[in-house]
Image (cartoon, rainbow, N blue to C red; front, side):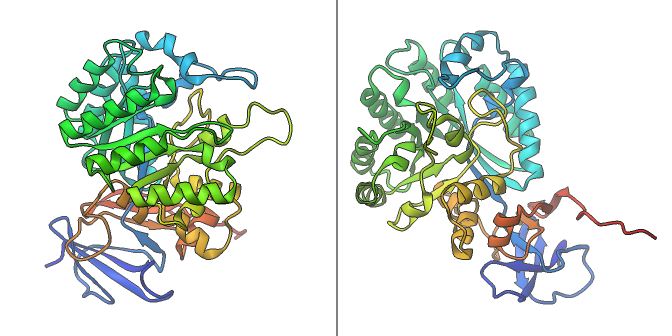
Length: 410
């Protein structure tokens, strides 16, 4: 008794050309096999690649599309956090919701079905951004699972009142606690407080960490120690980590092994990091993008994600995760098919693991969340930016796009 069938789907786990049908009943996958019986309504994938949906592990919905009101800063020396801060008291919950919703819809159209969004709180914005994004997540639960990571963007120990706002947001349902220690007068104290709150509320940890053009001191060392102390291995992620891009191979390998041993994952954000790093030079400019593949080689779990979209820290973006994987592969010189396949995994299976998703995958018993991409393989999807042609959430189609056709004369 099937409600729906996605037919002729190519899965990464199956040999090329081995197509399967995915049968859905009650919003869950009940069959994955060739040639399911005709009868139920269906969608013909025609041999295209399927996955359980793209996973956005690090985005800022509350600050997306700020270019609507704030133009990009001019010159090479810019400070987006300081630039935006004076405008935050005037930002309303309605404005956050409007900008965030437009961005969320773009994410959905590009095949994202799971998301962790960072939402900042401080005396300037209060909980307006958090409340707006939380309401948006509830409204769009029919299309996507969204978890909120609440964090102090402008500092914690040096911003009285921020700690209380973090606690309020955690009590209201935030499931992840984050931070941005480099904007704090006492970075180590902020990191320690984040771990205390994570223990108190039973949340995961996701920090913006070790951003810079030179390796120098790493706050990740303290994070690894606290992860072991609090028993949070597998529940801690670090975003950006651009200092890794400036390390010689030996030090990078040692740092990667430390992260892997502690169970600390890394999210690389190529668009933002490429835009912001290297501005201290006017020639031979550094890329400043951590090589996720090099981290994978030492056992670190990694994801690739969007971070900012159309705001002063990243004044471009269309919410396509495949574009992020393609950009990452270009910047880090990863063009072999297996490397592109790993880049795809950093949008899917590895990203799901980073978020601790136990219900992810195209397998019997899992939620019927399925994306059909206009590509035959994961490597081709990354190389050619294969568009999502169909998206299913709990077995219900939420997105449909017709493949482009060339109209010849006659």
